[in-house]
Length: 341
Image 1 (cartoon, rainbow, N blue to C red):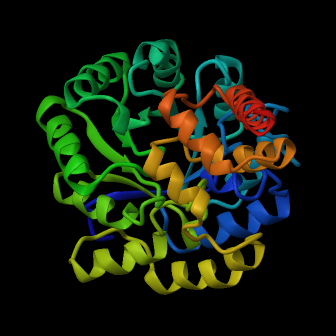
Image 2: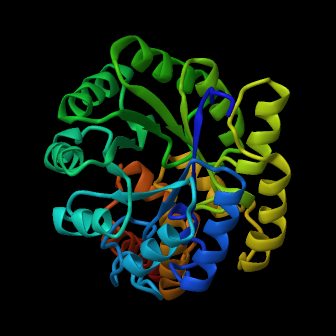
Image 3: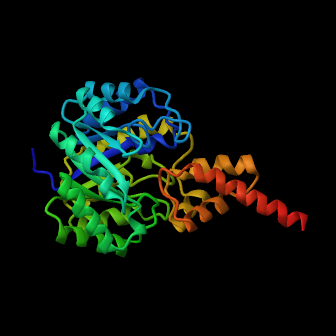
């Protein structure tokens, strides 16, 4: 097989769990994973949208236990490796080891961009039990480059084989991706990765810039299936890589067919840039907040955009979903007081 220039991780069954309200079934995961494996996708991420043990009232209840989904995915892989995401404080070492025992081979440990220190135990344990390790620095737009380098070096020291710049809000502009990837490439001795969201219609442009600057681990999602306006669209990315003579090893026709025939029919609505997802990128807010903000807006009869912009002003991060209700209630109260006056 031709040597790959970079490695794609397909995230439709993790990040893509958000727009599906975490309702994946075993049958769906079997069908999707088999098609991705046959298309020669090297890594396939499977877990709740908020990572291992994310199923909860706060983050959204899964229809199917994620361990059953992971086990199903592993069962149909001939060459692909199954990856899992874990956010310290949500998932624990127990779930990480359980995922490894049923066949997961890659652990992606995700923290806020300024909180890499909470990943130390999880990365080191993942390394000890023989998993490939990835440090995921989320909300990368919200810290200066110097802080990003500092935190990435911590993850490297804990045993990360790869460190990702994660544009959780879809807020980064191409020149900001360029400077971040370049800085990490100059500062680290491990692989550099990039995970984009399309809230400002820049996921693909940002991904190509990241590759140009030396990122060799890239996330994509078939049919753009992911939180907010979705992620870098895998099948489009593969076509562009072929035009650029960059080897991904993925079969273009097969990935196009599975996106069209398997993923498209399960989408609740097309992945597009709506007013809410646009505001996510504009305000720099975590992409998975979109559905929560919509629900809160309906309950409190306020504009979801006002909620998201206020969340951005307060610099609320993943794990603080309870703040969405608080902010919606405060906006409704202020609105009511204004009417009384």
